[in-house]
Image (cartoon, rainbow, N blue to C red; front, side, top):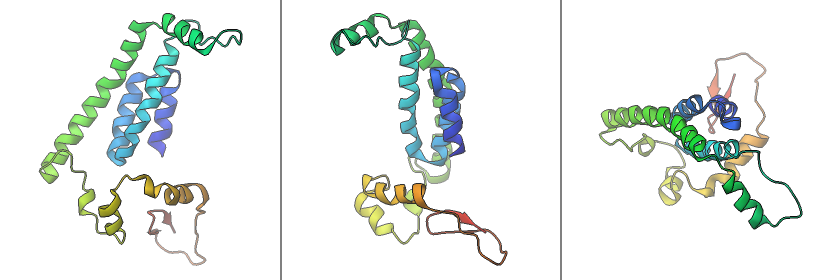
Length: 165
């Protein structure tokens, strides 16, 4: 989550494309689904590359506003921002793929096939990144409260990977 927050800060207005690319690469190493956040930077770079901003005049059609936006797009700036974003991202991902090849013999194996968890059958049935898990994961992220036991003890993890002490 921290890497996701840092990525968003770097990606806003495409101010720090190198930082955004590097942090997204690191976030991908923790959770491969984080790669989808790259769309945020791509759109922010597009928005930041439109000269004069987007037209919000209500008297013109959406089509006309879209044409005007493309006309005002600074292509060199957009390509430069995307390149500065992709360079560190590709570098980090290359190192990570090499590391996975060294560990598992396959650069695209992230270790998920070696998980020994109770829901292994569900992973085999729907895959690890299926939308099937969306409701459960949303419930965990949005409504799970921390659990603090009465007696002090070492930190432990719940079945969802949340720490409590």
